[in-house]
Length: 73
Image 1: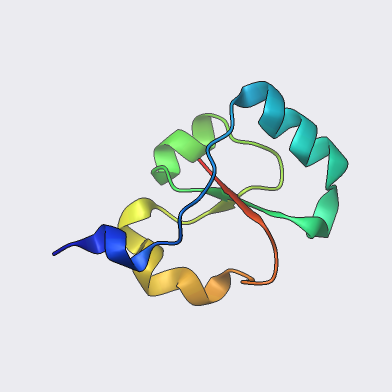
Image 2 (image 1 turned 180 degrees about the vertical axis):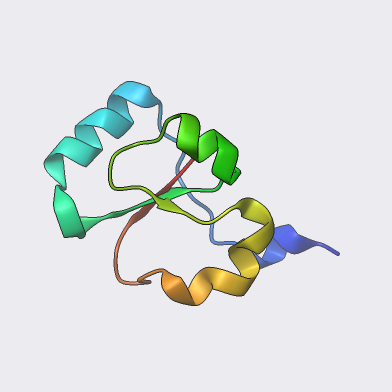
């Protein structure tokens, strides 16, 4: 399956850019999506991040607000 055809191209940003973006868009202005496994999330995550492990993402897309920018890690 050519799954890439279903994705919207997205810009990749580095850590300093991400940190600046988060500080400029506090609280409910953005969604921070953590696609790692629960055990990785428990060890450490960005405050306010939503955990949806990558294998579950296609089934849980409805949980994300399409009107908000989403940072994925």
